[in-house]
Amino acid sequence: MTTATSTEQQPALLRYQPTELDSSPEVSELLQQLGLGSFVPDGLTAFGGRNDNWAGTTTSGDQVFVKTVVRAPDGSSRELDRTLAYENLVGQLPADSPLRSPVHLGTHRAGALSAYRLLSGARSGSEVALDGDFDEELCRTAGRAVATLHGLDTSGTDVDSDEAPLPPLGWLEAFPWSAAQERSMAQIAAWKLVQDDAEVVSALHLLRDREKAAPLTPAHCDLRFDQFIHHEGTLYLCDWEEFRIADPARDVGAFIGEWLFQATYSVFAPTGAPTGAPGAPALGFDLTHEEIVERGADSLRRHVPRIAAFWQGYLECRVPDAGLAERAVGFAGWHMYDRLIATAQAHAILNPVARAAAGIGRVLLLNPSGAVATLRLEAPSGSS
Ligand SMILES: Nc1ncnc2c1ncn2[C@@H]1O[C@H](COP(=O)(O)OP(=O)(O)O)[C@@H](O)[C@H]1O
Ligand SMILES: [Mg+2]
Image 1 (cartoon, helix red, strand yellow):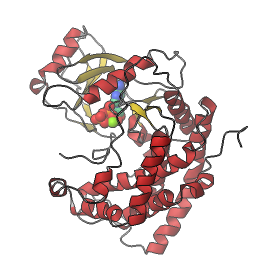
Image 2: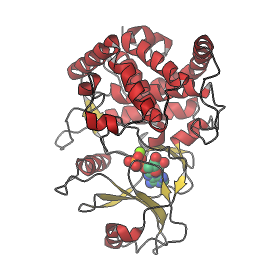
Image 3: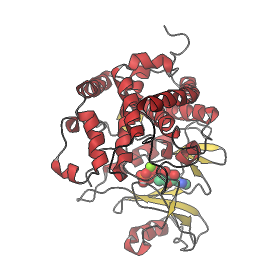
Image 4: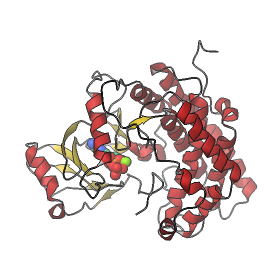
């Protein structure tokens, strides 16, 4: 599939039937190499995600999570290389570091597989957010983790510094016919919201220009709620296949964008009820545009303290460059479009709430400096 958004995937709340192990013999090879025996079929499960994964107990009695990533036809995998680059770096972190990720047990290169210690009984960050439990304290913890990531020392290491692919600037004019064929009517309509809006297109170009001039750092580059895992009171960050040297504003903006997207959608679905659930009412079709905007504004106000808490946590661990907050608002704006394009995949018609999310994204992209104070992304104390 031609993938232009990071998010064309299912939320991680659900457990799935894993792919048959017989069709992925490398999984058993990896477990054997690591001295973990093999997966016990009983209770073996999979979590939602872009890539195949297996979670369960092995015959050695260990709890293990194995995931596969994309391989090129020649067998190489940039995703795996980036993941390993991250795993090599985190060795430098002290045990009490604010940045935590699941323990990496080993890798099977030919199979593009990695094994991790399974955080058994954990909840995905998207589940925590939907349940209303991603509170200010947890947001502050997330901010500290992300700032610590941005402060990692990569000198003497070989971390990917290729430009992050999103937003796909070529697609802002038009996308290839092959890509159009693979997309739903709603998704094409969502793309057209961007493509037909000359001001948004030029704001996205400007954002990428600003990014090029910004001081770059190690960055996750695919941050979303479902990349966080909450386990026994500790917050972990996973899924490092986009890890690279990039603008730290990408991660900050993605986290802010997650909240703004959630704020927009939660107006129409009570907390705890996933909006895409079968039988859920169509979003917003019974409301006027004014009602949507009014409810949306209220919801945004309610979510701002969490964004502020994330930023406070960030400032506790790192001094951002002077333009980071403003660029982050721009990336949050893009994130709104990215998410609405992804969620439109399953629909024939673009719903009014998706249009409201685009409206908010547009405001952020066109006037990022105006939103810095509203979102309480204050400058660190001591700076002018
Ligand atoms: N070590 C782990 N223990 C428990 N759950 C995990 C672990 N690693 C990942 N997960 C869960 O599995 C989901 C998919 O893993 P992820 O690495 O994000 O794969 P993908 O690239 O497919 O998104 C995550 O969103 C998270 O909820
Ligand atoms: Mg993921």
